[in-house]
Image 1 (cartoon, rainbow, N blue to C red):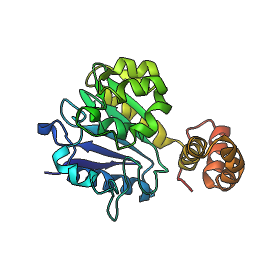
Image 2: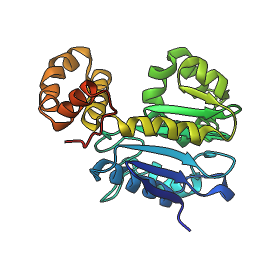
Image 3: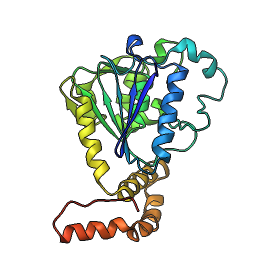
Length: 259
């Protein structure tokens, strides 16, 4: 049985962790299946957005450490293979297409770090988050030390990175770490609702918005300003812009092709 369910629904790619008997603990095989799904999202021109979710009661209990110890000791870190894209974006290129994240139960360590490399997050009430690495003799190496303080502030980030304590979905919602807080069992439906809206929007516009935002975060606002209109120019020459204008004039829903 596959450790990750990968299903294409129109313009949406579903990426579902599928090891519920082990609380979706991530071993190396699961990592590579997720990395292959990210590569598919990036390189399939029909795909516009992904939803990451998990089967069972929990998103993930974290990394299966006995399977990863040798990797952490190699000094190189986690390396995706050919035809894969790192879902933590510690190595290699990053996605130019958005990912909507849906969590429930417990979402520990690598679950939080994958969430931090997504764009819109949904969690069920009662979901618990944690970076437990300091309780296991290591420190977070999937991006939490790089991104968490940007998301929830320095003090909040260090409060949990340095203690390994848990925080709740309600806290995460208050901080803005998640954007939708829903009843248990509704997290996937809400994530799909958001993804469907993204899938109907103009793909070049969505990807341009995401790229510009990422440039501002990673390279600074001044660089983002300089690249804003050069990045917009090819989008303005697209068929989708013509469709957007025409659909507005005709008072109908636009049908975008990503061209």
